[in-house]
Image (cartoon, rainbow, N blue to C red; front, side):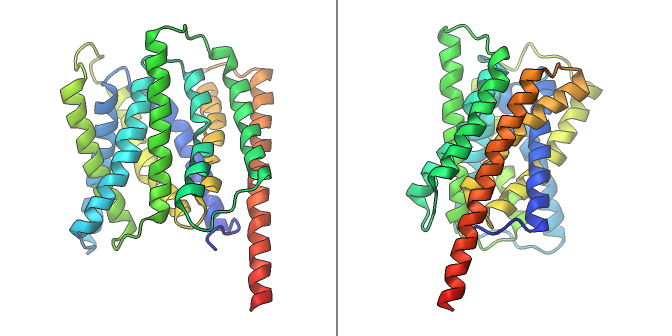
Length: 310
């Protein structure tokens, strides 16, 4: 049973993931005025991929064979090209408030796909209830900032976010069910290298490369953070957790990311945090605690049955 209790290593990886990917929203916000969406995502992941691949090849890791290379390419395109690239693009048409709300549906998508694609997945009513409570918290938190007009551009952004979340959810579940005979870090590097390259090609073919601010120290600082913290640290923690826990349990990081993003905006760029925000954060964390408690209860029950059988 891979739905393990939260050991110190798993808890540390989860906390790091929540912090890192929660703060990358701010990093993307700072960088998106300098580069087109897919170019931003592509350069970020291509650079991170080059760093990881070079380091672990020098340390003696072997390149993946053709079979593993195809698997890495497929998952990378789902997560990075489809997930990250489309989210960045959608934010040109839709507010961050609606983006947060729609992205809050990702854990539910992952739960549904897990039930369809993964064996021995156990999801209870309490688990789904906890996710819905957290989703309600995201709606409360984002409501004051949801000012989109219902025009063609809004619907375009809406569809892009839904599609991005589905790509990300499918990629997350595929990580769980895919067996790879390659070093984890090297595999991550190769995956980001390929998906980053695809993103750059998409940008050059389909995106307008003009009308952006000249690159300066603020861009390079934010990009360095996105590469090192967001891509290298964040993706490693995500893969580490997915290989050891059920995807539905890992997916609740999406809710905590929203809380971290709000706090980062408050600390770094002086965005306001109201009583509504604090109440919403409390609702989000309550839902997360319910989900984690229920998975822990399921895990304990399974372990007890295994002990009795033994």
